[in-house]
Image (cartoon, one colour):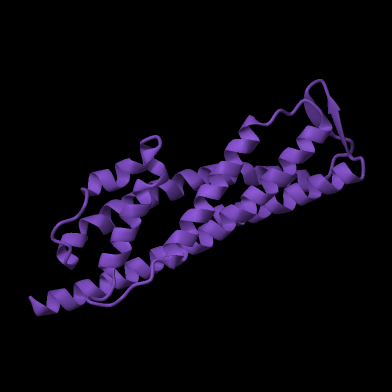
Length: 195
């Protein structure tokens, strides 16, 4: 649902840019208005569905992080660098959330792989880069002034780039998540049969 909402928001921003380029938007009393009432404005509801699905996604992801990190001692990491609680908690600590969650994900990713196998963490670095870039773009749009139509159009463009970067981050995120989950299931089955 979150990805579908992001795709709809990309379409919405493209349509808004089209309206701007065709003089279909006006700025009145500090608010951007549409000159004509278009049916596609219902796509604005995709913003609401994106927020609701993002909250659900974040809660589910944090539960997954806790569970995946809790599995590490069983999978062979007898000395984890943190606790499952802190594996979740680092996402909420200012400044630390820029690097500590990455090290937690890297630890989960490496220890979930096959024993002795050399594991490339390039996909983690790529995902983290997209994730950081998406949040930087989001913060830029929050801080940009929107006092006229030209400034609003700049925000539309940055939002459009933000949604696209967020989609790429999400695709990589799902690939990492499924890979770790599959690896932990396989490794736990092997360990269980050896016990």
